[in-house]
Image: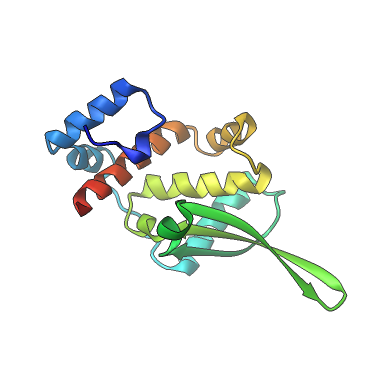
Length: 165
């Protein structure tokens, strides 16, 4: 049995079921049936507007965003699917701080629900830096189906990984 790097922390019975779906060639079809609608957020400008709309709806009092982009190098370089960073710059006698969110470009072609899940994850980091109970409560406040979507994103990444072999 191959190791499933995206599902390593999940129980063995779930990993076994995923292996069965892979061996039967049904993992991609199952995901396509469940999440058939791609999103229309293609450019960095559209991504910024999408993220800003979610932020305005759920996190109005959080810090403003300076930049939101798709990043083609993100998955390879950072071993992450999205990042949030704080950039500090000295401008004259003042220190200016800007927040950036980068989303792995694999989500440019992913189903709409998967893009929302990763955006929700990164937005939650604006309020809570660590992956703790408060962080996940915030994620489920913004997207009630967050945990299922996170698991399905891991299935999707496993499917993409199997296609590349």
